[in-house]
Image 1 (cartoon, helix red, strand yellow):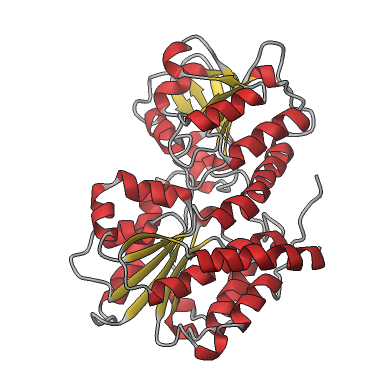
Image 2: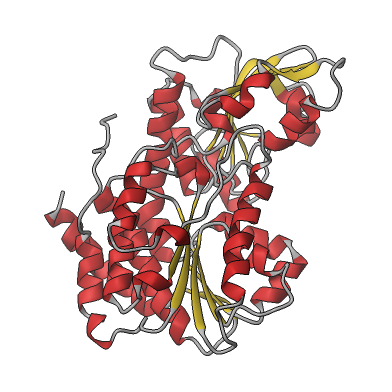
Amino acid sequence: MVGLPETIPDRLPLLDAFVAERAESAPLAGVSAVLIQHQLGSIVPMVRALLSLGLEPDRVFFVDIPYSANAEVRVALEGLCLQKAHFASGSYDLSQPYAAFQRRRVQDIAAGMLGELRPNDPLLVLDDGAYFVEAACCFARSFGDLRVVEQTTRGIIKIHDDAAMSRYVASVPLIDVARSSSKARLEAPWIGEAVCRSLHRTLGRHFALASGERALVTGFGVIGRAVASSLMTELGIPPSRIHVLDPSPSAQRAALEQGLILWDRRSAAHLRFKLVVGCSGQTSIGIGDRVFLEDGAVLASASSGSGELSREQFVELADTHPSDDIFVLEGETLATRSIHDSIDLHLVDRTVRFLNGGFPVNFDGRVNNVAAERIQVTRTLMVGAALQAVESARRGILPLSDEVCAWVDHMYPKLFAANC
């Protein structure tokens, strides 16, 4: 697999074309914005596009995702005249619970805005994991005229699974980019490829399952299918040794059609896996599932945050008592390691490894994890959703407009072919 350029793209052709048709009316003039986004190279032209649509730099607040934070991208964002004081503060290390750390950072930004926003002041949030809605539920005061765009399936799942968040979202427009047809069809295969590339690089060329050892893929959507394909083609694992965990009947049928094996933890108490790749977008492996892991098992997340494989719960269990037989190897160094380091845990009678600190393996702090000409689909959809959000009179979770999807579906093949 070829590497990716470590450069920040100056422009994204699809995004430029989209903005050119809409910039004259400055639809984002007077809007304040909170961007809770990965600091990847392609985020810079997206912010530039938002500014072209009328958003003012001193009204923009930025909360990075710690496991993709990149100093070079941060400098480029500041070069767009974003104020340094408007970037979230805080330094994350592997000894901290990730969810609480990130929630606190978002709450800090939110609390600082409460005194500045009047009831009718428009506030646009471009979120990556429903962090702002989760934080907003903790305040009695309203955040002006709040409009939200959510780009991850994990964020939508969080909202559906949390009654307080669901009730809050019922009172504001939230545009669901995550489940838009264009994102699933055009972006998801590239994300799957990025996960596979990172997995291949991290495991190494010589990684192989010994005779009788098995791999497990949790979640068999577009990304899970790409991962399973990579396990077969790149790592040479036969389909008869790849198991799939997914409750969806259609996903199960797709797995069976590829010759893969369906797994149900309730009927496979003695089955163990040497490699687990989490692709479900929610918690798929819990601490009780450690009985299904081989000695030396490798766990790799392909989903947002640290929750897919319950890394925090495993570490918390390891810290429960100094005399038991569950502990983090070299646990005293967690606070000083890179957050992209592997974490090895001793689990009574076996040792397992969480790749990339338990975070998604395709987010390793590099400038790019997907080629800019490919990820520009998502950046364009997010900008289109932002415009839809500020204009919407409806409330609740709303699908991304057919108009935006149709425009991207029509234009992307032309521009992509011309810029590859």
